[in-house]
Length: 100
Image (cartoon, rainbow, N blue to C red):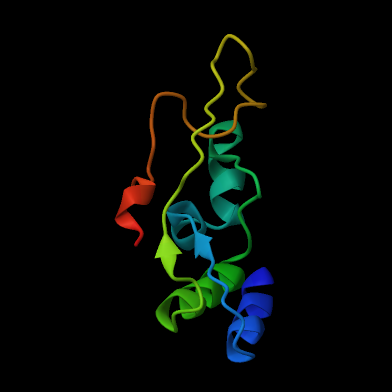
């Protein structure tokens, strides 16, 4: 997991920060299996164990921000249901301005 590399770099004193997005903290790959195309995202959702470990990195300060700066929603006319990533017209993430 990349967060472990960030943690090690921080431990060595390197001035590095990292963030994650809310959907990686709230959903696992099971959500994609259940909901299909609209639940897909990039990078893909991971296992329940990975979600739990990601929370550890948030709580210990390795990941200093939970937010999203990318909102590239596909329109229904350009993709099929199975190809759609995210939920067109909806966002579950806070604005990046909440990260300071």
